[in-house]
Image (cartoon, rainbow, N blue to C red; front, side):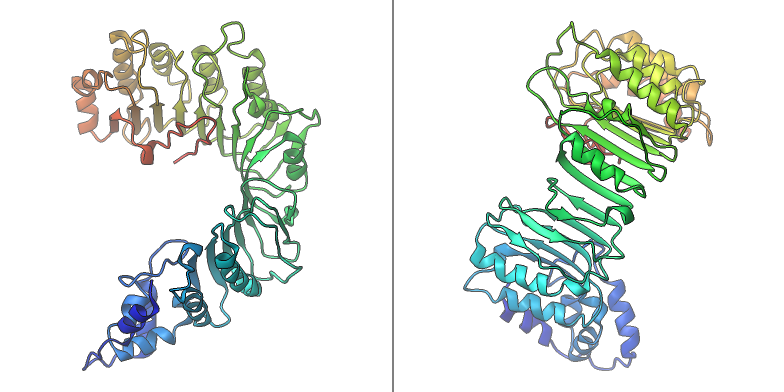
Length: 454
């Protein structure tokens, strides 16, 4: 974005006859700001758009530091032809001494990126919400010991060369994300309430958890490695997401093994994701310890689980029903089943409202291009409608049902045209049977990807 274009807009023309106090302008301009976490400069959005209307609006905007305390900095704009770094520095300077929300996306060129990185680094005493995407950088990046007294939230993608930084002098830091994990980035773990990371071995994963007893929300993708046997209690944890990385042979059952040594009495939301395998060895499927570890975890923790999301969990349909029987408090259930899933059996069991009696939303995702006809039988489809009718009770029972698929041959019409299906929809039940929508279904088709609850 060229500076001359910015200046041209910012000069504008004065709108006559407006006698609104500057303080009122400031409040209005703040309400016009985009809601994104970090501000991407745009000539069609505040604060630049309002700065170009007239001289008075420009003066009001420049006198309002809250309009300029957030900025997304992108290294691709740093070229000899653009004074992008000066533009960013001037933008941030207008925020004065306010806490800053800054996002930096680095490029592979140190000549272009280092100037932006130095700008952001010099502002570290004002950091409040920071995102550092340094993954394209090849060199080692260091941050000298600093004062991060205002820092509350940080997301980091370290450079491939390494990142050396300590946030122990950040008394307000509560939320952190580090992808991939590296021990070279040090956090005050005991004060963290939310942490997310990927590509951890089990040992550093448990080491982190032991030193972070106040975690409320945790998301991890774990590699297959030796497991500890010592029980770990996380009394504050309310949200846990575990994803297993793919391995060449066999199963990566690390999430189940981790549950086997965890105790989380306050847990409300649980997400488990397993890597996709097209062919599961018959003599290995399903791993017998998986269901036992899960049920033991549920019994030991004695929590009131509210939300459960399972992606490609290697259990039989009957085992899955066992899991649901153990979770009477469950309200929202999201499932991406394996190809071996017995659709009819599952829905016949759910007709019985003693299974998850408080269930309000059921979301199924079939991300396969071809689903066996043995799964989608007329009997199985009829059991779907039977279950919906049995569960429907306006204001108390199942309120939302979504079945998304990737198979073009899926007989969705057999369900949606059923008179009871249409009746439930007319009575207010939220129903969808049709093509998978990536944004809505968060299907995570790629191997080993995390599966998030929407």
